[in-house]
Image (cartoon, rainbow over all chains, first blue to last red; front, top):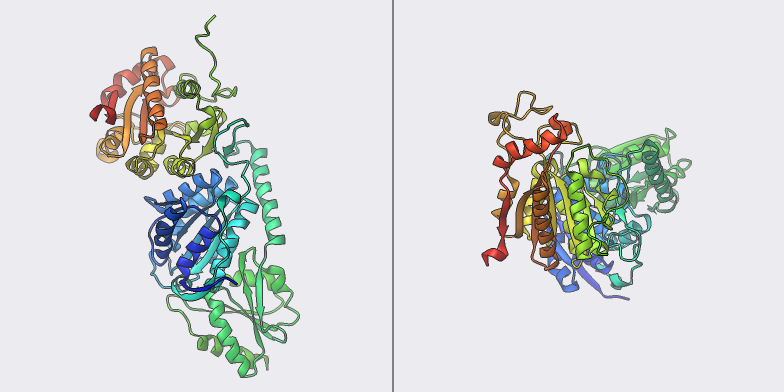
Length: 353
Length: 248
């Protein structure tokens, strides 16, 4: 059993990335994720790695594009407005089928918004990141330990599918301290060689990193290839967790920080005899659609809880497909209290009685 | 018998898609000859731009990486940081480097990234159909400056090479032209010096190449060569703008 250490979420992400064999970080300062670049700038040189503070988020994501194409495990991190700027690079990275890991420690928007925790980038992360038909694989941790585990896993998943993977946290998760346990560090030299990478065509055919396909059939084939990849991702990579769902009549669907607050609300509701449980998506893309749908025979009502005005609720409704009502509770700017969720659950419980 | 000329090994056999009279092909060939002469084809990673040279990865017979518009220096930075022992070059036009990619080129140069940038300046956007570029000359007619570039509205032709020469990061910066055989020979010399500087680990190098675009200038290839000399060269004078070995 490895030693448990008390660590801030953002710094734990950095340590997990280094242990996953990541030696390259390109980023730009933005609150509330600044501890990640600070950690990487301090620790990467100790591992013969490269930390580079880019001139912009746009440049940072294109440096990631270059480094990923060169075959390295590479990380970038930002917060909401910065992710908008990284979107260009991510579309190219997905189009050229390169692996990388992107962390978004969400703050409240739109525009400059503010630096309060938020989950307002769900649509951006899972659907509308940038131009073209592509997806990031999106992990939504709810504890610092899970930030560590999913950051580590993200590098493997990115390599396996040659696709960018996003770790989607929020300002609260990034800033909180919790005890965590780390995995044994991995030596990047032990990772399998990426035969497609641009590292000089010595004694082999040339490699080209590209997402341009001018001929119509070629362009369709490129998109079909991506589509087939996403089908595999959907079939193999869905992760979710259930809490007190055994006899539940109401299901809260929540991820990340919202799920943590919801667990407290569910426990309080249970004390009042309300049969409520939690479905917590751990992957937001692919969304646990079948897993939510499988609860429809048992569950009478769903409540989606988010720190937004209602984004994931659209995926919950698609999964439930009209068979049960899906309600929404959310606040943004302000982080809600468990009591506010409880109040809503009491009302829903009363309606069911 | 000694062979004095041949098709460069570092070019693929793919036919260029460039218009008649365009000088991209000349510059491609020079870079390929230099890769052959320095024996670096298997050590080189090129970064292609968005613009007329977007398909450069089909012509250079080395590892290639297609960048998004203007970001080639950032992409090249990512590659070079992973493979500091390899040769990395970007090939960019004036819309790419002097407009949408100004931040990336300025900061790559300022960091002294040990890469080589080949900057093709033909004073117009070629691939998109002849729009005004930041390098378009005063009074020059394009599809988006139909009455001629008006300096009060559109600003002055931007002199990127002079701007970048003011930074401490670059090792060698020069402006050359390829409109006559004599100028082509000089251009090759400058390009080779830039690649050699990179091999020597001396930092950022950039060669601006004055080039022609007969199609979008709306003149014949021969007139285009004359137009370059008569109108472009007074605004964009040739020569070494920065050479730190000479200073030292």
